Amino acid sequence: METNKKQISKIHLLKNQLHLSDEEYGAALESYGVSSSKDLSYEQAADLIKKLIKLLPKELRENFTQRRNASTGSAAKQKYDELGIRWNERLREHYATPKQLRMLEAMWMTSPRVEHKTEEAFMKFVKRISGKEKLEWVMMSDVRKIKKAIESL
Image 1 (cartoon, rainbow, N blue to C red):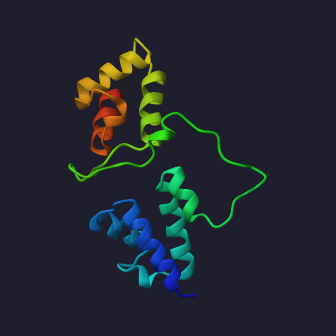
Image 2: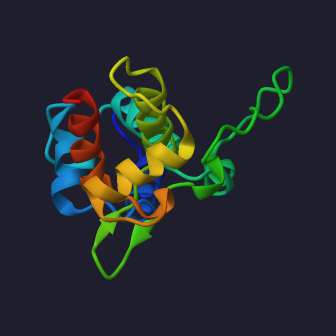
C-alpha cells in the first residue's frame, strides 16, 4: 500500500514542529531506504509518523495522536518532562531532551567512580564540562561530551 497525502502532510508538519534540519530529515528517510516521503510505503510512513510523534513535547503530541488508551490514562510525569523538546533559534540547535537529561543524571548517580552522588555535585560537573549554569540549558551537542566525561572518570 502506498503512502497517502494525509500521511505525507503529517510527516512534513511533524518535521517542521521538531525543527528537523534537511540532514536530520534525510537521515530519517534513509533509514527506510528512501530519499522522499512520497517513496515510503503506507506502513513505513505510519512507523515514521509514530517515531516523530514520540519526539514531540506532550502538549503537541496529543494533537497528533488519533486515539488514546483509556485503560492506561495519561502517563506519569517523569523528571524534566516539563522541559519537552526545545529549539534554540539563535544557535539553531535542539536542547537536550528530558530523556537525555535523565540518562546523564542516572549515569552520574550510579557510576562507581563518582564520590558525591548529589544533584549539586552533578550540576557542578555539568557546568565544568559544558559551561552551562543550568541543566535545562544543556544542548544536544553537550550530551555526548558530558556522557564521555562521566564514563572516563
